[in-house]
Image 1 (cartoon, rainbow, N blue to C red):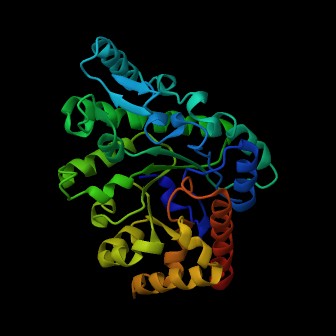
Image 2: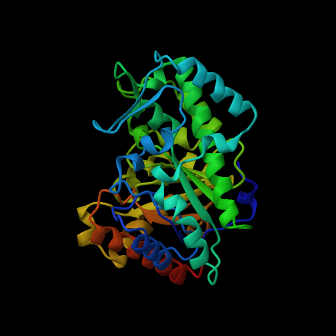
Length: 355
């Protein structure tokens, strides 16, 4: 857990998830600068390239990794001739804490290499309070990436140990990259876990303790805040019982489900945790919403969470506002509206509650 929890209050700060549908980097940076004045992030642009997808982007350097550009498939071949050598080099890099070994190349992250320095220049006159990064979480990466037999690598004891260390080192390298561009600005690293919706089903037979250990290990060694993002319904008590500082959830569709865990949520916030309310929909539903309707939707949930131990103002002080998920699947116009509504909602909450 980050020591920032003791001092940092987001007060309904506007943040966003990683992906956007745009392909032009300058227009994307313009949108981020205009709508996220306090917490810029580097954009993932999957419409530019298969290499910017959530597995290929972070799979670089993974022992046994195979990139099928023609079939647009990323998988692992542990029976390949070079696997043993790659595995040895991997663990040597981990033990030496050689972060450069785990760099995300410019070929797989245009928004990182072309975007971060450009964002730093754009924010010189409006110094941000956070700089946000993101990686695919270990559960989603381990379930989504398969071996040559199309079996999820999370069920291979050797490969899952590799995955969790790989994701951790990727996150640490990324954080160092962001800290160089934004010196003195705290970082926030999201572990994106869409596959947590499968926990407890036949598709994911991992134990609760195993998942908890995976999520705890990937956050080790990071200097800033850490968060986990899940855009569906899951066992929220599990995520609230990890080391991460922040829980980001789809409050538009699944807020009622989360509120079933009232006691765990209260304990999480009182212990210094943060909630990021993904109340701005990243679907066609965005066409029928505005800041007033979303404000009412969010406040209904916040009021239901509040108690004699936790006031509405205390909840909102430790809250962020975000889109419900990445905007990569939206049209560019809908993505712009989602980001604009996120900022407007943040401003409405701050004005209404004098945050």
